[in-house]
Length: 411
Image (cartoon, rainbow, N blue to C red; front, top):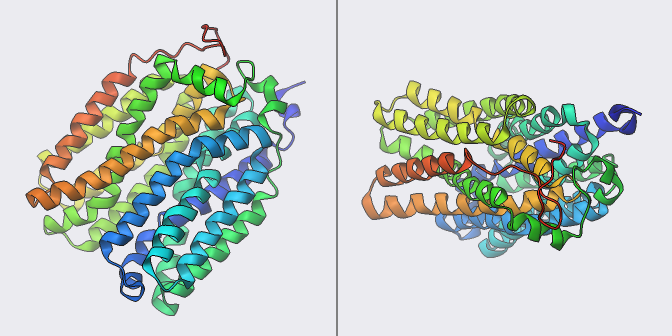
């Protein structure tokens, strides 16, 4: 029996996962649209709004391993529904609350953070990885990852228009309705829990905590996770602070908006491309190449006059390597430990990414307040990116059994 015959619902799973990813990731990338119109009415500040978004990222990262473990045990469908409802509740709370703490910290920070942990990368990529035949796994994971960038291309102009025409509360209610539709679509994903898909796993299934201990004892997994910190550190700094940096350089706000749009388009392309490349070449070397390319791009960007043209070129390079790490990290986890506990193990690595993101966004603000410029922050990105590339290149990617012994496995 062929892999395609074993997974008759493969394309249904891929399409549902891509749709959920597009909405889930697209909505969170639109939070910034609500900053200016909402804070005065909520009695909050820009710093309070920024903290809520940072809290969202931290809650997402810290809860991802636990939510991923639930997906491995019970399948994607119940986790997507439960977390999708939390996501919807968070947006509703933001839309109707009259106080900043409830709307921002509980709504945007806690509830949507928990929501995206189950409707983002870990659970969805686990479902796709287990359904896909090995020779197409990287391509399909890249396709679904790229959908996370495609969503914002529709949702950002929609949100901007709704805020201008109806106000931020009605726009937030509309986003909550879109999130509710995402929950309904999640019912179609189907798919068995990991325990019932063990024949697709490279290594035998083991208990969640045993799998976690095995991963944390694997030097290659630890190395990859530490390097993943640099990914979050670089990207969240750029997402959070690039518009302000461009303003300090005398460029118009439209340049920052155009740069984010270019990043989104190139992101979708890069995710798919690296999913394909990860099937043909060493994922660990491709990851090292991504970190080195980003770091080199930062150095070149800073060494040349900052202009609209140089900024858009920089955004294109960063976008092309943005989510390209996701299919490569996914491929390495599948190679090292198999797919039975994929979502849990992806979540463990992702914690480092999100801590890095929290640190990068926070560090940028601290440096700007202390020095009046972003110079030191940019060079911190260069140093951490170079260290990540050097760590990632020699990574030990030999598979391990649940008891820690090496074993050759299906990539």
